[in-house]
Image (tube, rainbow, N blue to C red; front, side, top):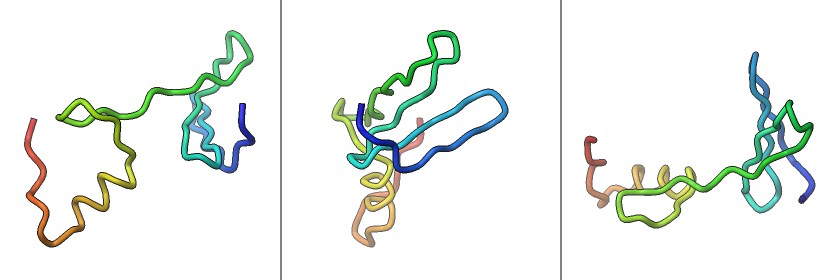
Length: 67
């Protein structure tokens, strides 16, 4: 596993972000970090939140579709 550069905690969860942008969730039962799958967009391709945010901010981008 890569070195985590950022950790986020809530009351019941612990998440980490590595230098490559991969997100991990800590599993308290096994005392191990588990890599989370990337988000999937409507076209079936993986996308990151940064890519989705950039798309929303683009002036010529179509508005997001409602689900």
